[in-house]
Image 1 (cartoon, rainbow, N blue to C red):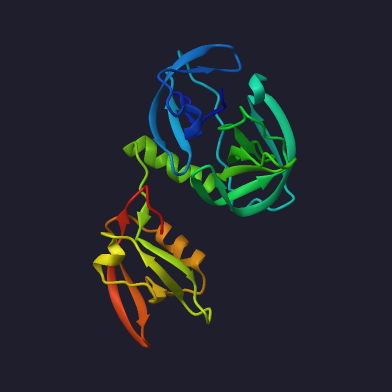
Image 2 (cartoon, one colour; image 1 turned 135 degrees about the horizontal axis):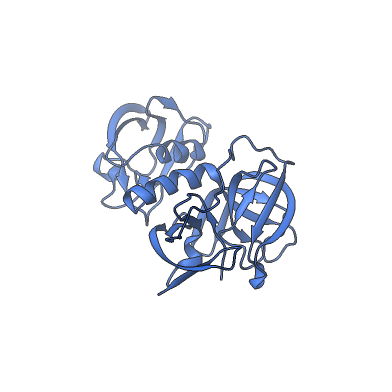
Length: 263
């Protein structure tokens, strides 16, 4: 069992990928105790999000998305879900941190909201809402070794993924295919490895290269490059300024789409 929330009157529902992963049948039960069979519109394992569709007799009440960018550490939030089968349980807390990088099993998240609102097994896929009743995150995981540490996927990510899933059924994962680390002088980003048959290899990038600029913008940290790549689209041509053995040059890399690989 898991949780989810309705985002359209005609029955589109957001939840976690791991909630429905491997299911041969999916049943959605509403607060009215009415149950509906659901189909998977689209799902993305890497970002752990999925969109379901039910066919209700009439219009359904919905939740609206709020801004996870505007929410601040210390702001009150409410988690709603189905922990341990206790349906429609509400817990309250605050945003403890933003932008948390967290490894959960074999998934690597880079930008989670951290909250001390109680999140337990079964809460996965449920909404984290602000005091205006807007969804600012999707409850996803807890730290099993700690109390009061839960994590949610921010609404900025959820909205982007939702729009891609309902239109295309899949999510693009832009990448160039390099392992990166801070440079010694904090100027640019150092390449520590290149993925075979990747866009980076196609333009001749090698370990030891320093990427100074991506699409005209100076780089100082690996996260800046990661974020910049994530804002692109597969197939887009982007200029890189690269330094090798003291000599700089510009190359044009074509962004790839490899959901199983990361920058």
